[in-house]
Image (cartoon, rainbow, N blue to C red):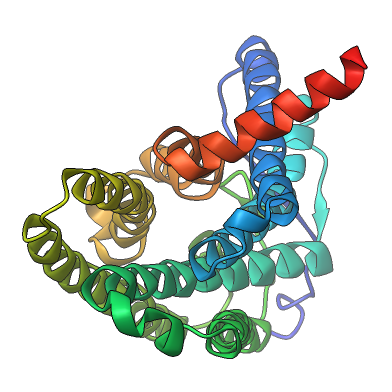
Length: 313
């Protein structure tokens, strides 16, 4: 048995087994989407940093969401693009474990940031007179630091459980990145504890926040309907509907992936769900927030007008 348990030093990511021509088309498409993700989230960060009107708690949280989305994309997409051009190129064991840890850390952090953003909207709309006292800058910084710290800590818990497992072959991961469930399939030991911890973490980090978000927006909806000002109702609906779009895309695909029975989702279908969860969602977030948020659109117009004016002068 000891001879069979030789250490695996690298893995091969099988990615999408669709043929060279389709791979080239996917490479071009995903490269374009990757560029949109970086440019869109980078633009959100730049607009928030440059515009003093957006130096509020809501946009402070939004800027950290943009940072997480950029980190998401940089963690998984480059390796996926490399595999589309050279499917046989391996990834080292250390590189694979690092990718898994970063994906888990960023995923958990985004869940908690979305929870914090829903709490911010709840306080802003349901308790407007107490908003500045409840959501002070020190409190906002504490919430963001807690989100990053908890996300990283949960990622470390998963990694400590993975690294105790022996990997003795095969070394082919049927995915486009080192996703934790796909990695666990290659372990030469019982992974029941790992799966139990993953399910428990999913309940804590997905179901719990989602329930809080739904309760929060139910209260927000009641408060919005009681508003006398039509402009106030429109602005509140615009801001909250954009947040709900992001929450629906992110939590919906994640819950299906980690909590639904796996027999109902073939491996190729799981890859598509992960594309939504870890690739398209970070790309769509800036579009959802910018197209449905009047303040962001106004700030973007002012920046563009200022640049145009400076070029003319």
